[in-house]
Every structure is written in C-alpha cells, then in structure tokens.
Length: 333
Ligand SMILES: [Zn+2]
Image (cartoon, rainbow, N blue to C red; front, side):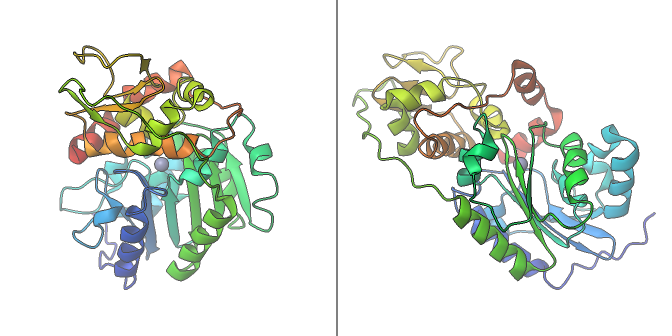
C-alpha cells in the first residue's frame, strides 16, 4: 500500500478553474481531448480519462497518481507505463488520463496539454520548423516528432525536458504542452505561446448545403463546410488524417461525395459534400462534431498550398485499435 498523502493540493481548485476556461475554448480543446496536472508531495493530480476539461468546476475530474512509480516504469518498462490505470491511487473508479506519462516526465509542477488549433496549423505541416519560423524566438521550446500518444511519446518528450530548461513542447501532428512551477506562470505561458502562434482563419466561401438532406444527415460545422467549398483546402482535407483525435472521433482521413447519400452504409460520421459543405451523421457524438469543427479550424489556418504531413496507414491502424481509447470514448459517449 502506498503511504502517499492524498489530500488535494490547495491550488487544485485554481487548476480546475484554468482547466474549465481552456476546456471551453474550441480553439484549444475539443471534446475529451487535452489534459492538465499538478504535482504535490509525490502525487500527480491529473485529469481522468474520458472526462471533459470544460466540466472541471462542476465535477471532480482529477485523480491522484503515484508519480515516482510512473517515472520508474517509464525508465524501465514502457508497456507498463502505458497502463496509466495501474498508477491511479483513487478509489473513485476513474482512470488517470492515457496521457499521464506525458505529464510525469516534466520537472515543473504544473503541466497543461492542449490540442491548440494554432499549434496544429504549424505541426501538421511537412516542415513544421520552417512553418514556425521566428514565431517562438525567446521561448524555451522544442518540437517532438509524432508518436502515438502515451508512454513512447513521453519517453521522447523526456529527452528534451529532463533538465527542466524546456517549458514549451510542440508535438508533431498532435498539439502543445506548456509547463511551469505555478498556475499563474503556466497560464501566462500558454497565453503567450498561443499569441505567438496565432494565425487568422482564411476568408473562405460560405457553404451552400441543399435544403432537402436525407434524414440521416445534418449540416456540419461552418468551419469545415467552408473547407469543402475551397478546392485547394478540400484537397488538403482529403489527403489523410492529420492528428490522433481526428481518427478517434471522425474516422481515418476524410471522404468527399458529390451528392448526399441516402444511406450511411460504411461511410464515416462526417463527409464532405464537394463545393457545398459538410454533413454530420444524426447519430454522431458531440465529440465527432467538435473534431469536425477542429479540422475546419486547422485547415483554414494553413497556407492553401501547404505541404502537410499525414499519419501513415500503420499510425492510423494503431489509433483505431487502441483499447485505452475505446474506454475514453465510452465514457465520453
Ligand atoms: Zn493529446
């Protein structure tokens, strides 16, 4: 039995307030994505898998985790470190986030991980460093290439952050992590990086969806509808999957059709209607809607002639067949 003190740290409530604020901004967090944590006396308090940051002030979303045991597992046995639930100390039944290991590797006390749209618009490009240019000059940052979220990614991140010098990590085809020793400092750093990477959305044509859609579909989010009406960005959308949560919530890649199908068949829950807009299945979850909107928000912020880096077939398969993800989706249903 662990004799760790499970009294929540005094600033956990302030972390909840910050989490609720960023969790309500679709340009930072979509659906059950992203996570926040705080370390206190050997315990890592982290968002539970499948909970929403946006709800951090309405319910307990944080679970205590054995920080040193997780760090030891990362150093010795990556597969064990990937079973975040083995390190949970809560009796309440919620599992720690599947990205817990990503937080454990930071020496800083507070860690915030977001799927920031402005960050994604840079890190989905084939040459993210060139895309970032001088925007992050003055920050202590690094870029870690894509790996499936979890312990293998955490091990890569650890190589950059172990010294405590780096406090901004851009994750290729994934998102952003910022870290700081207190909440105010970390929240400010997130705001500063966000401002440095901010890109205005391109002015794209308005959607023109037919009025008589088959009943299985509803008009999708405006941001992705506009992508369907812009030939250059439509072809970027059809190139493949750009980041994990897209695959989890919308399926692999994106499909375009010329007329709205009457039957869903094997179609994914989100389909583009060429030159007209986007359709979302009536049965689709709020998470699917949020990730469809996210794709539109990201593609409106990359250059129309950008060269993008898509997940490989193997990387897509690893996400589709991911047990921990199935658990998260079930909770987020
Ligand atoms: Zn993530």
